[in-house]
Image (cartoon, rainbow over all chains, first blue to last red; front, side):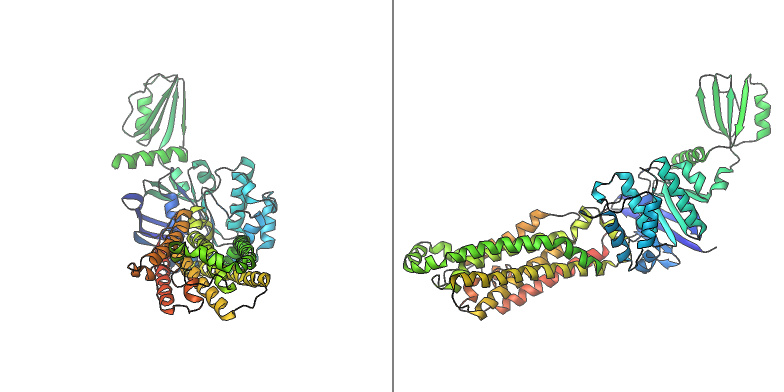
Length: 295
Length: 261
């Protein structure tokens, strides 16, 4: 596979403030890549650096094999970008915004724009200033998709969208991905990354903590072990990553030797036990806390 | 030329509003000329008592009782000041408003180079100032037709040409400054042109402040110098160079800056 996005020690600092630090990332052609991190972790900074809106302080980045500083215009021609919060020019209707976006690309996207607006049930004659946050978000989705880009960059795409629109959005993104579009999205909603992305990277305080296939991240050796009918955490062999107590229940995230765990549990008077694969959310927090402990 | 067209479309109403309102004032004032002419002696006598004021406004050398002198005295000042304010406000906002209104993320994520964005916006600024001055020039004919006097075409052309160049200089300087800002600043857009106007007033009152001739573009656009004289081209050239320097700085800054989003 070809890399659509590749960064090498990409760094962006705002004076003394941190943006992103030594980010090495590869997004392959045809992938749906999720970029996970809480607010302020550096997700938008990375995206804006890739788009040339801000200049990197160090390192380099390539999109479609082209340097982001030298070939910005060529790169942007093939990208559809949806910002986390879109602002538009005043006194414009939805169709004016979409036409302006198409004209800036020297294209006529009217048919596709109409199709996408119908898909999202978006009235093209409404003034954008009168639209709700969710509807403005729909406008930016249509603007990002109407020219059939080969790379879609979506910054927190589903925040502010109701569940029905979220479903319509993911159906459309999946359809585009099946047609060959590479998707790079940032999110702090772990479940949507787990359900829709093939690869993911976790960013913490501007640094990539881990980058792997979502399946591999989820297929960790760690297991969520829940014991019911137990009041206190029993003594367990090494490998306990995280624990939680609630009334009559103890849960641990365990990544040690399973046989040793079974042996030690024989002495514990639990009434019920479940051993499951952890959710991506738990893995995220695990990596997050691990990286936090290192710093 | 999408950005140019968009800027023109969104600013046309503003150009018309400024042009028509200032021109209306000019036409009304010129309508008073026949009365001034009938009482020329009284008027001259009255103004001779206001020597300091006429000097400050650079109109002491004008023949008030002639249509051209009266036009230069009244209309010249109103158009100069009004046009300079329009150029200042428009110039300072063209680039900065994209960042201030958070539309730069939408605009710059499209395949347009920053150089081309700046150039198209600059072209829109120049055309807006030229259109505004065409309105002023057109209404000058309306004003002169009211007083039913022949127009000294050369002097009228020179006066309007100099005022247009003055507004272009101010507009370009403000445009260059706009590239340094992260949001619109109407205070600068109004303050700097006003400062230039008052620099010229000071210059007229105190000849020791000669260096201000190179600072304020109002110096070469003053009716008192042009009517019965000529455009001081040397200062126009200096003004043009100053505008170019501001534009160059603006281009360099905008091409390399991190956009505020």
